[in-house]
Length: 161
Length: 199
Image 1 (cartoon, rainbow over the protein chains, first blue to last red):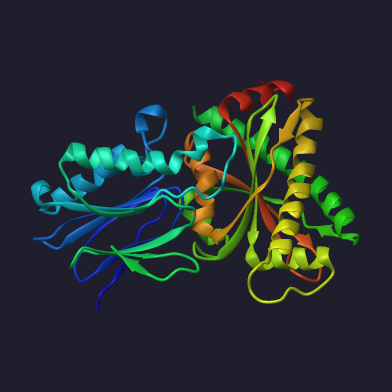
Image 2 (tube, each protein chain N blue to C red; image 1 turned 120 degrees about the vertical axis):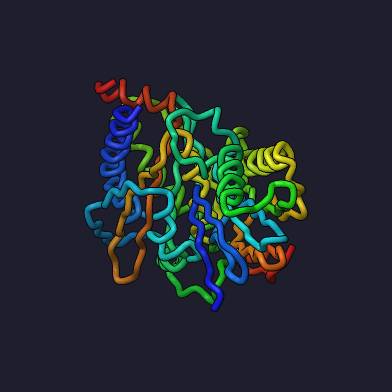
């Protein structure tokens, strides 16, 4: 019986097929899913902010795109995954409210997406697909089995990337 | 760092208590009915617990968000379950709502409710601190609790790992409860502390 592993906000986890891994209600946050297709082990990190170096005093690695992705990759490597086989998919980074006059916050979704992409690139992990931006929340389920990334949103049909 | 954060949360808590009282009075005047308020509960939560508080991360909620400008800057949010929001709108419009979703008129009524409640809240902050505070036009979003809560969580995320929510039960025959989340930015926080004489 396959189990579903849950990842909270600013949180991460790793599982192996046939289990799956989910995070509920991604808003401006980004859910980065990475797997090693050979071992069929996959992980998910739910990051909130783009850059750990901009903020002092936080010990939670999973909160930031840079440290979160690094930590996820490290955990996967500890389970025998190989960096050069890894592939990634990302979702989230929406702008939930149409801020008219708060430019810094307005862009946080987009900045999260950009930071995630550049971290993946720096680690040499190819980005296979993405469903990012727009103005609605997403619930995602990742299947290390085949790399399917299932995305649900309120009032919309399920998509798989 | 730890002390600053603790003091910060304490100040927000106090402002929250007073603000919720004012908001109740405003709501009562707007709905032209007596509204009772349970003592607001201030909850300091880890990010992970936030979704559960609203009845699960996938619970549909209505969030009203305003930017704050003037002597201090930041933002304020009033968030409630979709059902509570529907109860309030139905009360304001004096009729039962049809269907499951809000029509345009009802959405605009909901924004107005948010405007008045958060306005009352900001008024108490302004009076307490003698600072000028101007709220922006409210933005409304109805979506999964987790997604909407990510917005204040991210703002709190820049100063700590917890989020302060003030639960307010506007008691009536129907559920009209909601949460206030006040998020002054770091500079403004110093100003608030100074204005209150604790800085």
